[in-house]
Image 1 (cartoon, rainbow, N blue to C red):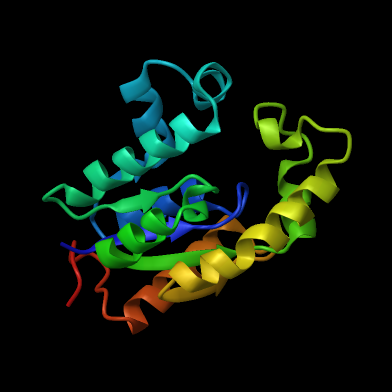
Image 2 (cartoon, one colour; image 1 turned 90 degrees about the vertical axis):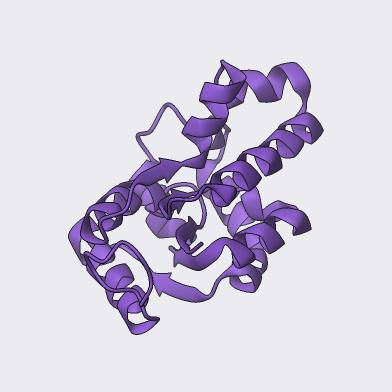
Length: 180
């Protein structure tokens, strides 16, 4: 079963663009972080603090496995760190068309600089943190992705158009609900 799977750093546009892509391709939109929180009965931040990173990553893998096993294709927005585990990278790559939304650290910082909800930015130097995450994860995103789309500082509409064009070139038909 084919899914459209969006990966990338927090702030790269996975959720915002994913919702619009889902409408364009007539698919449901699923945010893996929201599914995780609903199943855990608490926020990711709380779960992480209470159970630790190892338990969080195990549950994140279980969440991804369950979503990808669903019968109905969807547009899936993953958590930014989902690619840290080799098992997740394999699940994602086998689960559908994986699109890496590549945004440079400075563009992400500009998008998120006023965001008080992301733990990522609640550090002394959020720009340096974003850069460090990019350096740690970029190769993993590239390893996992079938397609790479630079989202840069484009408007959301322009980002969605670029992603949709890349998907259409890869065999997805807008409005079809599945790959052609």
